[in-house]
Length: 566
Image (cartoon, rainbow, N blue to C red; front, side, top):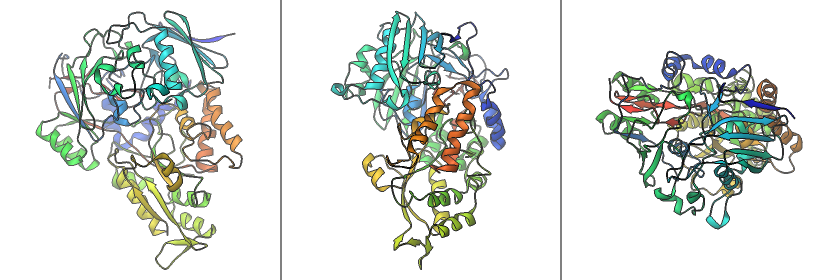
């Protein structure tokens, strides 16, 4: 049997041999190019995001404001954007993924290999890594974490949070103290990228004490123990989370160009839900940096000397996924009409900032395997939307709302309060749909609605899932995995649909590109499973905050950040 071998000497493997990631990213950038280029140094090294001024200064506390908050301090539970950004600073990954090229290089693992049918991955680990309680990180640590991530622990109240991400996970075998083999019952090409992923559904390595703690006990900072450059020292849910530097941290990925512990003493994440209050806190100096900046505030802050850093959040574009088990969105003409009535180019021209982008696919532009549907299945065409509804038998009523067989064309949808511009694009689509006879009621904070109720009552569910890999489509929409479009068990050709999604995990490199295209064709042209809205991510930082770094999943990593300088 032959294997694919990556050594610590060469230190890199690309997702695609002809990688479209950089081509797609720069082709999209347009007006955002000046912001995006801030994210790389002159030599292309991704060590700098916010402008660096002089030699790094050690020490200080950075107060960082954002709209949301981690729902937990347990990295394996967090499913929100804020949660992933926080936890990215207390955990490490097996591999590091370059945010521009998509290439992998060593981190906790010094080398890795996988077999021909992509069912076994073998990792050789660093031998100098410890958890913050002083215990060793080794092959047994990898096994215990993957087992619990996939299986959960009912007695501890730990859910199987990793089941949809690990897919056909079978077992982890401890080969020796620092060599581990991860086995799958079917091909799993996406596992390599998952080993470097820092967004939702990431593999976070926790100490045995944490793994043996209940879900409730994992809300206490002293019980959240990992290998990362910071440790949790304070957690006030929905208010404040504080992380403190680990002074013995010496295993940063070489690709970052940083040795030793982080520069900052502490980072205080502060939740400020109101956009005007967040901006006011920046302008007054109460906080020197913040996420979730509205387009209307970007020019103002730039004029006031704030350094803006922006990168597209790779993965699933923000938008709606349709509920195919519920009428009338089980009618493909209704789904096509909604997509045609969504003015993605108009959003970019009138609603979004330079740092945000038009959606061209269910995938964001930089993800390897991305295909552009903006002139095809996603083209804005109100006349077509009306015709589709006419042809499907939905006739306008006296009040302007269409009806069929005595039933009005009324839909329920969910929005996203945790993305600043989601409301304006959803409301614009809502208005456009009303103009062609479709009434949509939107609940912008659906977090307290039970999943069963969402499936039974809501036709449109907001989605925005980050991952720099086409596998995000498999995880979210495969009927046998996430089934985000609620495809019924008796849906025509369901087995073929599952097979098309599953095929993504059977190939790597250039061989995966046509499989990615086939899945996107299925989503946009054949089944119409989603209605993409836009791509976004942004940071505003004051002068004196240096090297705010957004990684390959567009998550904050404060290892190289420092305060001071000009």
